[in-house]
Figure 1 (cartoon, rainbow, N blue to C red):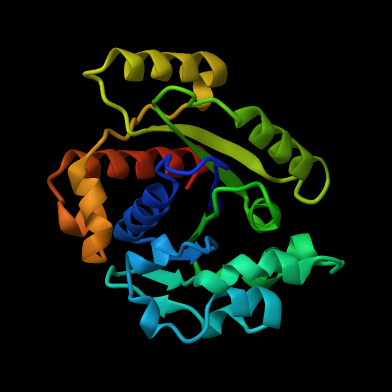
Figure 2 (cartoon, rainbow, N blue to C red; figure 1 turned 180 degrees about the vertical axis):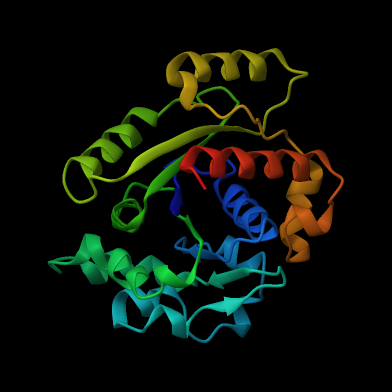
Length: 252
């Protein structure tokens, strides 16, 4: 199972979901790899200081460094990290004209896929070549959508991209589901947007909503997931439920 967490819009809880979904799977006993493909490196910084990283996913995808050489253990049992650094911002330019450009990540992950029960891909907030690599390599894609005004803006472009990937380079790709994030049941707009998202996507929407939470915002600063930072919080409960829903949908 390789799950790409994807949305071309920033600030929708994509990285928060990648961090906590991977940690939740690890807590369930699945040997899990979190792959940070975002030049902003927020998934990486939630586990380790960037100063401590020697090689990263840029080296894997541009210089043919084996992915096993960059993977490091996290503080969470069963959870491992393939880190990113700002150098990832140069990757798309370096891949222009390369015949295997959309397949780099898939090829590199094939070296390690058998070592892990689950792989979670944190992608940048664009529909560029890095995100295409993630969709080509993934078995499933999870789309977080913020419960706020303009939530569905740009979603059509993402769905078209997913359909194009499914049409040729990755016919096995499945849209795992849509996750409503930053939900605030106290506000009318949040409830209205959640209803609209369900009208558009139907059963693809996860039953679990991720509520706006100070604890979720704090946890990356402590270089840990919500399960270590605030195990009794609403955020921990919701991401644990999401993890169960994901595993149920993929049949694990």
